[in-house]
Image 1 (cartoon, one colour):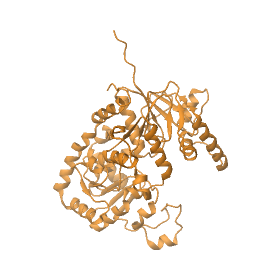
Image 2 (cartoon, one colour; image 1 turned 120 degrees about the horizontal axis):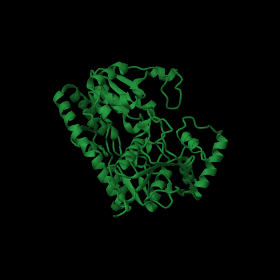
Image 3 (cartoon, one colour; image 1 turned 60 degrees about the horizontal axis):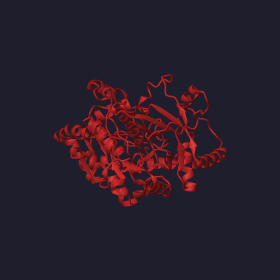
Image 4 (tube, helix red, strand yellow; image 1 turned 180 degrees about the vertical axis):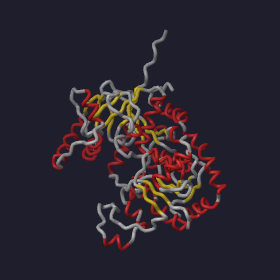
Length: 456
């Protein structure tokens, strides 16, 4: 009788996974971890938590990996520590294994924790790797005890795991295509991408649009890059929540009436095109408010400029560089700001919207569009970059630079019930093309290119 085959061992990085509110890349990494687990892989996660203990006490290592209060360091000592760690990682470091048990209560934070059978930690790994590459132009080297066959970096990080095949996901090349829209250090980003191309084992990306950019801007060969897209799967407890309960949540928590508002969710930054969306919504004359839910990121003050009184902007202390806390609001009934909504309520907000409006200037994939269509909510989105691939014919596509075209689309969504019903019906059908089964097949093809077969 043949011996049972051992599970393929695949590790992911925890670069974005420890953020409280998460990012699109954190969602990508979590979804990838659960998909790999469902397909029979042994999944490990490599963290770079600063405060995590590295001694012999198993319990302390597990506790401090999820510690909410990392220690603070004086700026001078931090700079010295950065320099020391950067040199150490360039020479090679060995990660400390961290046990994963049921001693830690994870209920309530499941939405930001990946599926993992194993974990490792190197304090300040990602910060030191990025700063070290900026100084020396070399990737940091990491050894994982009893390590994986594949290290899948979910972001283009200047690091590699010794003794494993290193796959890097490059979601998009926005820092190169739209350098004015990001705070990335462009020289470092480009250098990292070029070194990945030269010495990495394979590149994954999340749309054919991003693959074209990687080939055209970086000079990659077609066979060096695999498009896996992303998966969209939401918990049934949220998608199948009775509509009456979801209605009550939207009304009781936010004061909003069902299908009587438009909705945008995502970070407020130049790439998301919130300023033009606000302008288009106001110009449309819609009787329904625009609800914007998202953290205020870089240049948020400029993106939200139409919402605040000019005299207040001059007279009041503007607060932090991109803060808007002290500015006086106008248009209160037409544009509503929500800085954050827990995921369970965010799903209800999406379900209850008249339409989701997401006219981003550039997306590597565009997960909000797919999540909204899965929930049967009509969508208006951009006709550029990856978004037409994701939306298909199940959304209204507009030129995101043309506020008149966006305003006309909002007017159509206001007045044409048949159009909204058609989009609501087509959305889940389009979203089904990106379900777990389809994603699994694409992942199997990806890992096969580095010699690893997934059983699922």
